[in-house]
Image 1 (tube, helix red, strand yellow):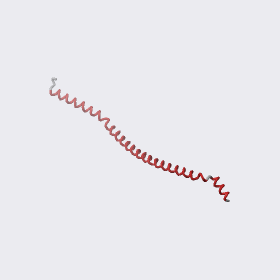
Image 2: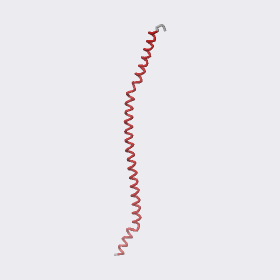
Image 3: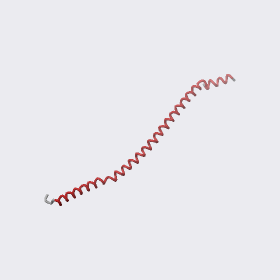
Image 4: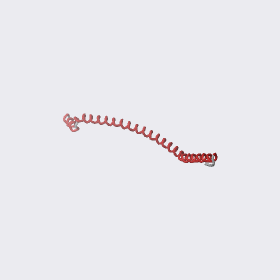
Length: 98
C-alpha cells in the first residue's frame, strides 16, 4: 500500500505543486493590482465624461448666445448710418449754403 501511495504521489507530481501554487499566488496578486488600476482608470473616465458633458452645455449656451447676436451687428450698422445721416441733415439745416 505504501508503495502504491508513493507511486500515486510521483504520478501526480506533488513535488512541483508548491512552485505552481506560488506562481498562481503571484498571478492572482498581479490580477488584483491590474483590477485596482482598471478601477482607477474607470473613475478617471467617469470624471472626464462629466467634464465633457459640462463643456457641451457651455458650448450649447455659447451657440445660443451667438445666434441671438447674429443680427445685432447689422442693426448696429444701420443705426450708425441713420445717426450719421441725421447729423448730416442737421448740419445742412444749420448752414444750407455749405
